[in-house]
Length: 54
Image 1 (tube, rainbow, N blue to C red):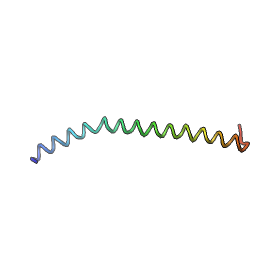
Image 2 (spheres, rainbow, N blue to C red):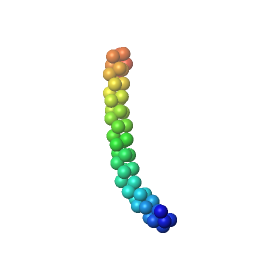
Image 3 (cartoon, helix red, strand yellow):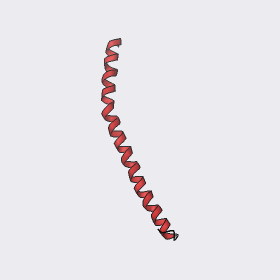
Image 4 (cartoon, rainbow, N blue to C red):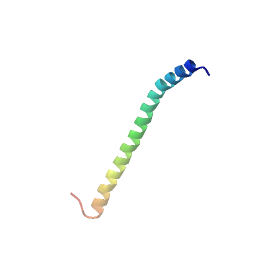
């Protein structure tokens, strides 16, 4: 593969990866938020069961 052809391919590859990284970041953010919601709710349930309510 000629050098400049490879350079052009890598530049296109870099620009194509930006939307993919945004999508992956949003997916990870969603999973972390759902985990926080579930674990936060569970901590409230355990606190109520142990009589540590507010």
